Image 1 (spheres, rainbow, N blue to C red):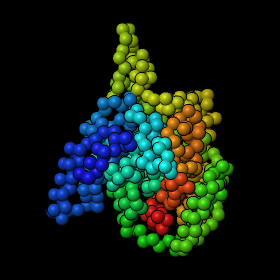
Image 2 (image 1 turned 120 degrees about the horizontal axis):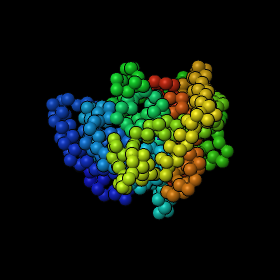
Image 3 (image 1 turned 30 degrees about the horizontal axis):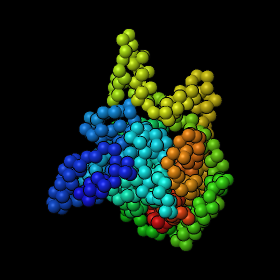
Image 4 (image 1 turned 45 degrees about the vertical axis):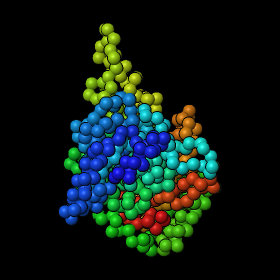
Length: 455
Ligand code: GLN
């Protein structure tokens, strides 16, 4: 814990941590020492972690990187962070992210962006750590903590993990409780670990998961010992390669990496088969209807009364003016864009044309996966991202360009499946690249084991 606290102090330029909690960390570390001395050593005892700012942490600022939550200190702890603390983990502080987890580059944060610790060759140009869990990615890659929590609504664990060369898993929808995690799109949001290795991810995921009566979508299923399932033996497993993920204009290096991943799994004894997921091309548009629709409803609660920021009112202002001014001041541009898209697609005149159609597309995407799993495919192998980390500022002017980053990851959230990004190589300029494995629902143990064979 002390080594991490020191490292964090020297790493302000990365912008990974947005709130520091050294006193809490030292208290938790002492308590962990005492547990260890008594021989009571749960899996995560004394492990120093960073917690994404989207998680409510009791008495500690939890702002979802938004101005509208400035000064908000929750009275309660999220179930996931509580599970980690119960297992002896230490919280070093809160991690940077895109505002309300909306973004792919960490640039929509009210705190300013986090930075990728990697550089392209000898260039000085600062690169994005990805988003929305950019602070988590940057902190783990720069050795500021041993692991971090992330959340993934459309790729926010897997894309940043790939951009900084670490492992990140989004479990099956319902594995981790969403209670106490600031809601973005409730039918897609899942928490997951971001760690240096697949083994660390297995240990941390097991600790994070639990059935939680406070989240009606949390699954009442036993959580397996994921670490014990890491045998590295994938003989007889069938890995599907979806032809629809071969995108026009995909860099050769990503193609090569994907082919190498296939070879590695084949060498380890897996059977590789070509598969088709025909509705893949509609995933991104469906996601960018469903996610903003749910966000516009979830974000209605930020009204200047219940949480954080309230605008200064002028003489004669009524409650409507107060709401309007508060929301105009408190939300950033991307969040406003999503609220507007969301209210539009949910409005009476357009509900069927956009929202309902997107929901039907979502069902088809889910069915595509069910069909390949029914045909005996155990996991699907794809690239994690369409490129390596890009320069900060490059895509901020064009939201659609930014949305294209999620092309390989959103299908997984729409279908509720577990997906993992594993670092598998470097591009010509020395930047990390990752592959994604998508598994059957509730089979994170098998998925982690397949990822272990790729590591
Ligand atoms: N980049 C996607 C978005 O902006 C995904 C974000 C996420 O997974 N939280 O919506």
